[in-house]
Image (cartoon, rainbow, N blue to C red; front, side, top):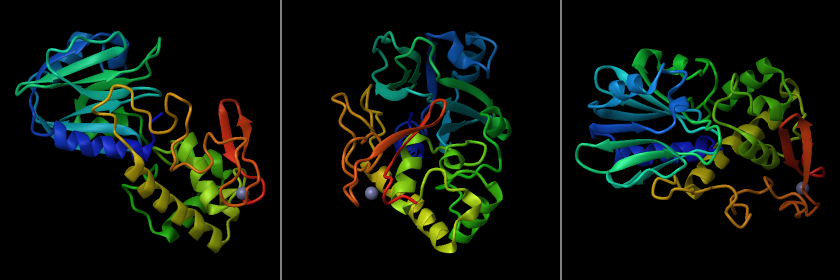
Length: 281
Ligand SMILES: [Zn+2]
């Protein structure tokens, strides 16, 4: 799953690549990707064809491309999806669910190698876009909202949840998943089950600084994948974990801070944490 830093890099690339272009043809290969926004493929195609892309925004890990006529094209890349640039005449690969070409040439393809794609896309009125995408208006986007450490501290205290669960809960914080939640906690030296309401001022400041520094570092390391159909910023084809990650995917390897071996622990169904038992308290 792409998390906030990678999606922000993708947003920036889309800003350069597609803003100002007008949509020519829209081909939907998999009808389910336009739900729940549209009843069927023709409804989505009609809404998007001929529209001009005016801005590229992001909230959490969802991309919002603002169109003329006060419409917004929502792109949720899903668990394993990717968005990449193609020529307008490129045939659709088997795992490509949507292709959109532009009047001045070129196209983008939305792909995901999954039997049931988790990609969702649709065109809605701009003022309804956030709600239509299922993003709570008061959920925190750590980059977009740019909170101060004191605001972040009040947010943690009010949420009162174990840190790992809080960081990955999109009703509280958007765009952070299994990867960067573990990275934030390792950098801050805090355990995954530490209740967010019991952090000292020092701990709040450490966690806050970790979120800021890691998001910036991850954006520097990220490749949006727009030029490749299968870029993975986290674990490559050979199973190598990206160098900018310190704990995620590194179970059995020494902790970069204290050399004790990193562990992978199941927190609850489907949620795991990579952590160091010695330097995360
Ligand atoms: Zn350690």
